[in-house]
Length: 444
Image (cartoon, rainbow, N blue to C red; front, top):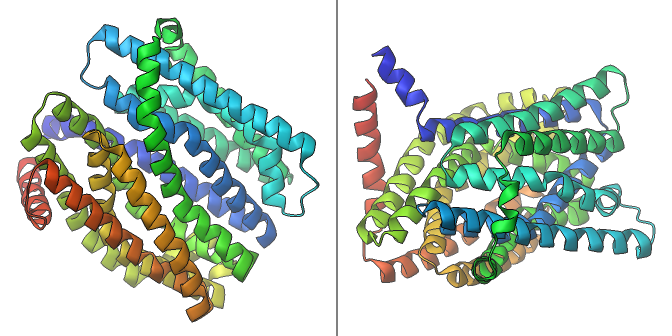
């Protein structure tokens, strides 16, 4: 019994879940410290900085992550080394381009009143240089399904950042500029660790080939558009809230949104394992296995989210108070943040189908479909945001309108996957329920 439990805890699903849980828990801990130690304007600047940084980073992560795993998983060692080297070349070229843009922005941009945007202009080039080795390392260990190593990388990055924030609080130097310094130092130290541990495979740089570089480019030019548009969902929400409702509304909206890590942890965790499994099945031309893996992941996560969503609706006020501190206990801001969280958790029941169907479309080598789909979803999201804010005059309108892009995405993805191999849509959820019962019996 004990040995069986230990073996389960060493499984790839548990390790992937642990890695994402580490990121989420440390992320929420960091944000909780910042909510307590920074003024509202400082919190808004940090949220804006992180949103913009993540959006710009999509040009690298969106271009390479899916493409790398697709071309790396299930291949022989020579091909794998070629893919790693070519990824280093493409990743380095994208990073160099971002650094050049950063230098030009610093030299020619006029002084900015928005503190968050000013921080991005000042630091985003250095941020991407510092994270390149750890980014490539994450791609490699994820494609190899070494989720123990992925856990090490994530734990080190997040723990160093939290430690830096705590040190700033202790010495009473916790301002937004110093928070950025702590962020940079944590990323530099993590990249040094990845290189020294051999996770980054930086020596494979010289094994790159022009053919593989072109393969990565032609796949990535679609996936980067898809990922950029996907990241624009949250970024556009943040920008619209900021400029239409103000900085205080950004803090309220982000607090409710941050607790959505309860959903994002399993979504990201199982996306990592699903991507490798789906790619392996597709590369070996096992169509029925591709659809089975899709059904299993969507069904299991959707069914598992139902009790989580019920709990979130019941205990949202407590969660917001713990996360945001005294500023959000028994106040109007706290009530709004709790309601944002409740509404997001209900909409989130659609997220597994949307996320994993899109992932599968990438795997079966139809990234152009995902790109067009996400553009349509993004357009619906932005239009919905403006309509929602105009209709209700608060952040609730934006959350409600998130429902429509998810429905659109599922409809387009389902239609495309039916062309690859026909299946019954609602079998996705039946399969998940059956799989959960089977896992429970096996574990017991």
